[in-house]
Image (tube, rainbow, N blue to C red; front, top):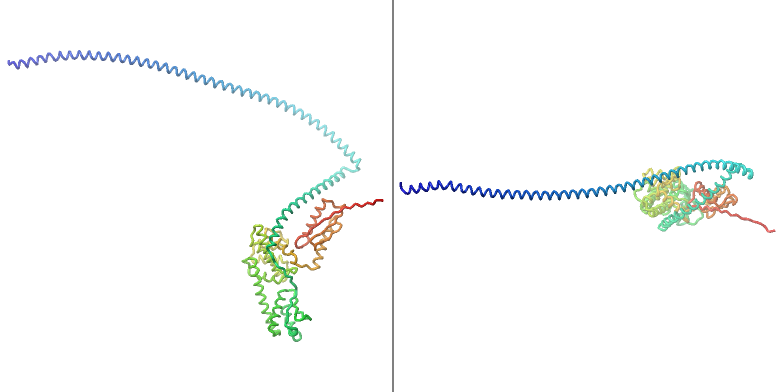
Length: 518
């Protein structure tokens, strides 16, 4: 065989022999390494386990120590809490015990008081019986000494009490009246004075005659006419009396109706200027004069509403206001009076913070009934209220018209203001004149009213009826009775008399003692 093949075979055989041997050697070496590593791992594992056991044992001991400490601390806290609770319970028990002791003491005291009260009640009952018997003996003794029965003594005591109550009532009334008057008078005077200062009105004294001046005395014959036909025609058409006497260059027109007198005056003046005086011409001039007076009446009514500043009044009421220019009341012109009352009412309403326009309206229309009271039946108050209702005036105005003389109770402050303004206007010096008969009648009525009261000796009306002085019998009227007497007299005067302004009641009591030295 060739050497190469032998070499190859030898190599293969060598490899075949070497590989197993080498593998065996490697295997044995690997086993040794593995065994060595395993031995080391076992040692490490045992060491780790030992360490873990040691650590676990330490942790366990630490945990046990912590648990023991926590349990000891919890136990201490519980012991402390139990101790505190026990102390608190003991305090409560002591307080309850003290309260029980106090209650026992109080109950004992109450029982003692009840016993003492019962004893006192029994004693009081005995004393009441003794007092009743003593009282009976005292009453009998008093009756024997005084000579009065118990009923008579009661009447005497009641009389004393009545006198005391009367005295206290009089003192109280006097104090209250003085206090109210001080406050009310101060305000009222302030309002009234302010209103009067701001309102200036002139007063003209009206008469029942008019005088017509003539150019010459020859005109008197022409006015009379043939057989007096001219003067009769003029008197018949106007309803006015013509007085032609010896008065130089003057003719007097006499009549109680101012409107007819004004118509006659205008017609006569026109006839004098024209110069043609006969019945037909007289009739024509009288007709023209009537139309002029109607126009004048309307203009006067409109002028009054403009002067006061009141608008929206029904035209018929405006015409009636104009007619009041020819109407008088105790010599005072009715229209001038109404305008003045309206102005005063507005000023008073302004002082009190009320509706000024409504107050002026009520004041202007308060006497509207006087324009027709000589034509219809009824007082001017009733007629004025009917006219205001007819022409749709407000309830405030109607009530002011009805109540301005006290016939009806005022239902608003404006009605009270109109009443006050009407009194102020009528009571002004020179505003009105009174006839002697009316004046003396009022004085007589004042004295009659006061003389009818018990204990009045004499009475005198002075100051033109503005004051009544009453002299009383001092033995019958005491100082306290004087207050009640003055009040009662004032009330009766208010109820029975009508008068402008106010009347002062002055009660005078005088005691005199006279003796003689012998």
